[in-house]
Image 1: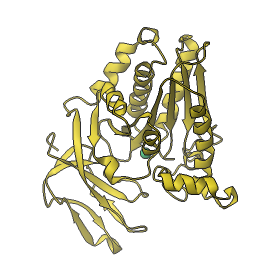
Image 2: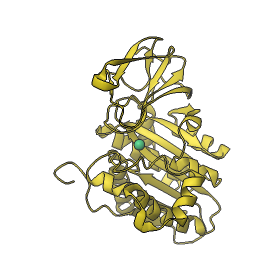
Image 3: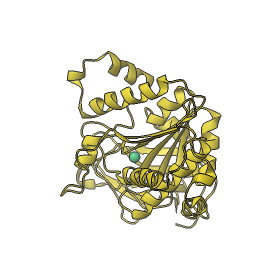
Length: 317
Ligand SMILES: [Zn+2]
């Protein structure tokens, strides 16, 4: 950590653990696609330390990759543009044919990360599982988002936290959208609030559980598996298995936006409830368009998604 709380000089490949025998399944875990979300990187360091300490037997290949290293160093969500909105087929094609010298900060990071992912996927594997570690600026329990094949749904259910349905139709260009479009099982987990220590715990648990589900590590070989599993499940107690997202409060670039203090993920809100203020001098009132469940209220300065609403209310706010 540097004096602004950022991670400087971060490597792209955070760790690799491989079976002695080649040809097993592959698990790719990414962290820090948003530079203000360091918890996933810290969790992955813990997992690799544990693999080394306990000499955990690998049944396949596990590789962990960092995302927005320039953002993580500052730390800010992004430098020029959101690195989790640039993975559409069109954007990737444009990146591949563009001159790297004209890359902005995130395009340069994406080009580098994409090269590693391409190389990993180039080796023929019987099965590929991807997990993307994220956290939110607001507080609240962990939840997941998926894309691609039905196997993503199974992988997310395995983690036992609420799965948000329909978000993929609202947010375009995520890394899971890309991995899913290639037919791979892919899950994004929001582990909790960006700086909360429990977020690191949730990510650490999710990585181990995904490694087991992916067939890369045997459950019996994971140190303290029951504890790790329970720790993630207890973070999501009392919440539904699935929640359908039906609304996103979208912001204009440069639009001022401020949530009212105190909102958390999964808060119940009623139609007309004042949620935020926006526009010049924050004079405009932003109210809930309908009664539902609040998700991802934006308490950071960057990003064009103000908040999301799930259908139905899940618990008292
Ligand atoms: Zn994120």
